[in-house]
Length: 431
Ligand code: EPU
Image 1 (cartoon, protein in one colour):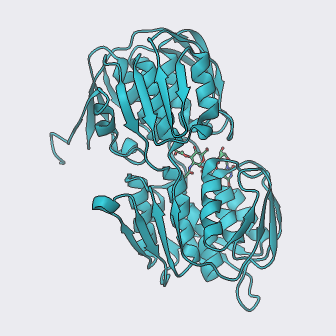
Image 2 (image 1 turned 180 degrees about the vertical axis):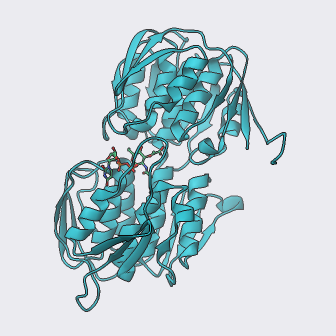
């Protein structure tokens, strides 16, 4: 199992480049199921979750080619024949976003078999709202041996029916999954209380380029006129706002001067506001943001919310920053019930953090010391990397595979701006 060895103390200086958004790319790859033509996606990040989705689509009979060489971030997907419309447990268990194929599979083939995702490190992660929406569109859903089996109504052409869906709770992949189901449905579907995340907008842009008729994506009300068929398209994935945010915090926490390039500043509003409050100097360009901090940070309270509020995917990283800010910060997690797994590891490095229910109280500024720490999930890992960048001595970060799910070559990118970080293979080998 790979580890990172990180020696803290260097301010990050220079320019660091953001890759394409993992969570947009996952939804857009699933959208390729909706057509027998080729879908070409550009700016696809080379991370483990994308490789998992490639395996998932391939196991169903799709041809998926992840680019290499100069075409490195271009992916070609052709779902001409879906011989086996099943998302198998072996793949779904490693990536909960696999449930994103449910909507497109049933829309395209009239049936889908998808393993129930189960829990993960950050909480239960149910898919009841996906199921409820598909049932409202006429699907019959049964559950057997850990699999969901969904069938479109038998109305001659096995097509879902347009309807009116009000989400009980805002869900990102739920909105995406049902959007993909609705584009090929018979008639109009009106969605209310939708997720407004940029990843939903990105997916809708691809679907419209494929011939779908979607309006309102990016707002809480989305209207879809079902069409009979979709065609191929070429689409460029948005920059990853969470990777960009992680780098902005890396610049700020190390007292550096960092230009975060190839990002979309419009997607970073809530984070940039909080960084300013913390005393960080920010200059915003069209596709880059420069952060400068002398290391004198102030405590700031955050409370995670759906977009455009403060993202839950930035909570752990912001907590690392809060340990280095003067004063008391409160950090409230409202989206997932169990997303404080990084707290104990930060405390082991010397942070003063207490948790009561959904709120963590961080008292700063505390010097951090190097330690052997363990990654528990993707964003928790990022928070530990940030803490290690300012810790005294050499931190060893175990279970880096969590990080590899969503950050492309992070150690190379950080090394390029002055961090002392290296990857170490399993020195003792496997027993
Ligand atoms: N929820 C339900 N029922 C459902 C679906 C969701 O109760 O059917 C609840 C969840 O339990 C949670 C809340 O609704 O409490 C929001 O969950 P959501 O469905 O929005 O999360 P998701 O779609 O599973 C995506 C991202 C996550 C990100 C969240 C919130 C992808 C592949 N994943 O998850 O990203 O944290 O939205 O913004 O898009 C990550 O990248 O590290 C990550 C976990």
